[in-house]
Length: 51
Image (cartoon, rainbow, N blue to C red; front, side, top):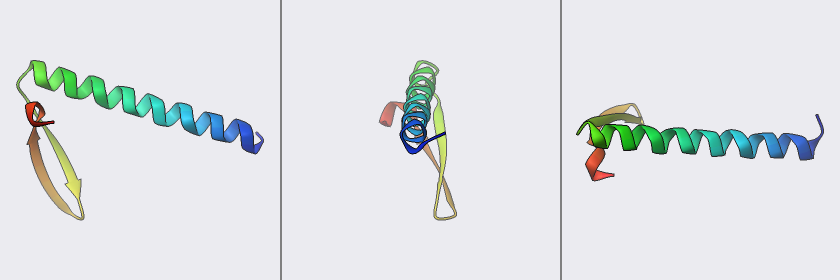
């Protein structure tokens, strides 16, 4: 796999992850749910409607 193909593959993986996250947020909003994130070792919850 050359560098160009690798960049194309990387872009498609990032795009797929973004779409999956958008679908997850949409589903949680419909369920009035929340998402759990971790940053710098701290875990916190966020209501999906706040996103």
